[in-house]
Image 1 (cartoon, helix red, strand yellow):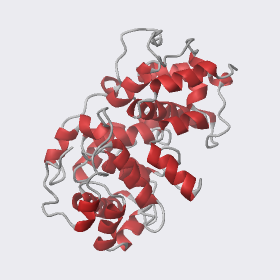
Image 2 (cartoon, one colour):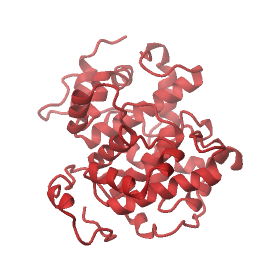
Image 3 (cartoon, helix red, strand yellow):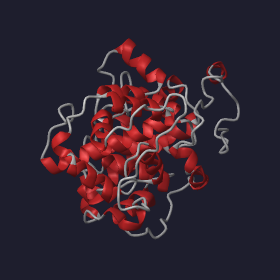
Length: 338
């Protein structure tokens, strides 16, 4: 997508050399592209529009039963329809995670080892999730967004807290964007610096606090009020960015659970799972005894179920963005049923 905001008028040699890499490669619309019109108003913190009720923001469903994926005769379609338990279990597996990763992320992991932190597979703090949501809500391809996140979360930058970002010079923040070979470098570098400043001053108890608990306390742990506070105080954070943030952080913040945004609803529906948030949560609960959660972070049972919900939503979205829905269904269909 072309930079309609015009933040880079004269290209540096480094930008010119990465021109081809900066072209979005995905045919599917990303979260940012779905909500790109919101970014036109990102020059100042916005007065939020009155949010609809929680129930209205959950993706609707036309049926009382989980949607079944249709049997398809196209080449590459699964030979047999996997059960909901098989689909859920496969989504929690390492094989499914790799299917949902872009190719360059797989190459980075192969070259740099499994210790590399990624948006696809790492457990992130609420501050890191907010930082990632801002990056992914820019009008860039999903792959460029994920590459930018890998660059800033790992060495040598490690922008993992308000303090880490604030301690980096503007030149270092800009260099991180050039190293990521992303688009909208200047605006993104400036925006993450402003994010760190706002969070440090208003939403955290110290420079190292990444929990954003101060935000939740101020909002009375009401997610509508939380969204309003974030949108009012953080430049360029619109509905798209907020949806990205809350679909990820809801396993840590029960007041936001269960939440399925429009982007995620399309992905889970293509897998034959319910796109309605309440029904998807109920399906996970009904199949809980059959799910292999050994690879997920440990916690209380309710938190573990919320984590599974988030992983299912994220990998369904990733599979759609990477064009791997049919491959994922094939993997689920051939997996061993519990």
